[in-house]
Image 1: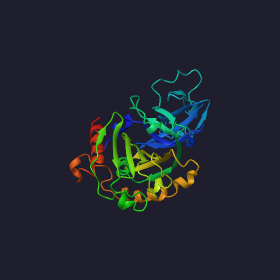
Image 2: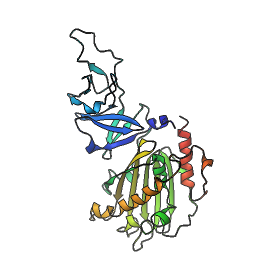
Image 3: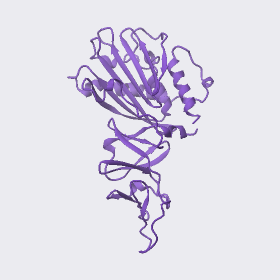
Image 4: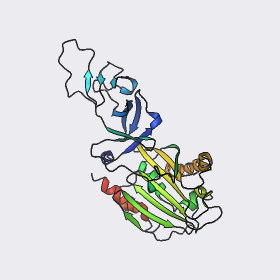
Length: 325
């Protein structure tokens, strides 16, 4: 399946701490990238010297110029070759055609993001502006690498009808496994849908294609609650779980997970994250077992239930439209 449509979106390739002044190799959409810091700016290039295909990430950066480790060809931050050491003094200037592809790159939410085209779609944001709001505390729980397709991992994060089976004792729905009707709306950024399980109002926002926020607000105070609400007991207490899937290849995905909350600010992040790894592992075992690896092109290729699968069906329709690009 072609990945061309995915090039029109922003994807994270690593954390901000992963990128320094010397080059480092990353992977996105099955391609090698080299990324480094040039002063206050980030540089993202194809990690392939146009001379003999060596990885530029094995070279060095000096004064913002990266040198290939094989024959010393040098490239500036735009990907333009600016020096070929084997040419004698007085040789004509290096042709402007000798260059490696450069890509848009930015640092947001503690991650480094890359867009493969200049016509990238809107950058994903955060519900309630939680990332920047003083009312919320946000932290990264961790990163998880799954041998799975990114769309499968996101569809799993969107789906709450599996909670009473895969995550029993962790994230069970308060009123049981029978899914009540709910509406899914198509937004300019992707999808939004809300589910009321009598204790929690679960407000999902999908920033297409691979960013999903699950904002859970207590609407009926009760003892216990689900895993992420173990300290949320008052009406209005809100916990936002965020999953950002990075498509390394068609069958390899890195998931960056975050928790935001407007309650229990005296509780440590470690305590809040306790149990999260177990939940992710429960999901990983399921998603890595799914066949085919990619979500099928046709809606008819798998069987659906209109009500429980409403969000998933809407997501698949967006995928089908995007694949036409």
